[in-house]
Amino acid sequence: MKKRSTSAWLLLGSFVSLGLGQSSGAPPRATSSDRPQGARAAGVVTAGTAAGWTMSDDDRIARRTRSVQTSSRALGSTTISGYSESIDGLQSPELFLPHEVFDHLLWGLSNDKKRATEVRDKFDSKIIVFGYDKNKFWRTLAASAQPYLTTQRSHIARHNNSTVFQTPDGKRTFVPINRDVCAARIVALEEARRRLGSKDFDRFLYTVVAPEMSHSESGNAPDRAGQLRYMAGGCK
View 1 (tube, one colour):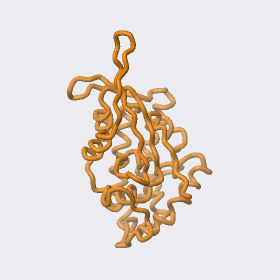
View 2 (spheres, rainbow, N blue to C red):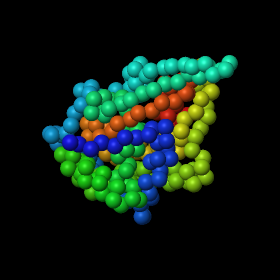
View 3 (cartoon, rainbow, N blue to C red):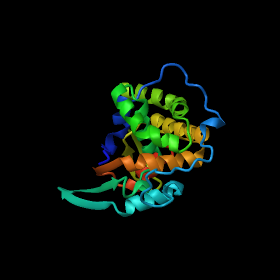
């Protein structure tokens, strides 16, 4: 049976940062040869929506929050609203946002060599099936993610791991990631897409990486969709 990881998503910013590390030296810049050369992803797991990798962030958020269970309870004179969500990547990989799947893949760059080896062993054969050179793939990913990981470690060391913001309708809420780290993550994701081929890389994320993920989270944020949208936009 395939072993999948469960992410405590509310702590994702700090959880991921503890395992990921800066690679020694600057990895060589990827070239067009690092992109798949017309190879078909035969044998790659495809689950959920057939073309889930083509969905927009707004569509993902709408589908994800549509099934969120909301509740409220009275505590004295205060009403607390909350949400609870659960995603099984084998069933609904399209419900994960790209940056969440990207963060999961980055465990392959972990300073924990055992963890990094486990992740690479899990994905290497499918990287090859996609038409990538596996060694160039990981070097390219490291080059793309390095500024993000450096920024992340800096803020984690200062215990600066959350951001309070105001939604368009005036609600104040938070996300469990520093604004600078959040912005750097989206830049890193876009750079990886540019170097590895946007459509190919997104297809890889949603047919190979997302099915390995599961997610369960509850919270009392007043606007879950606003939280997700804010992070998907790089906290801007």
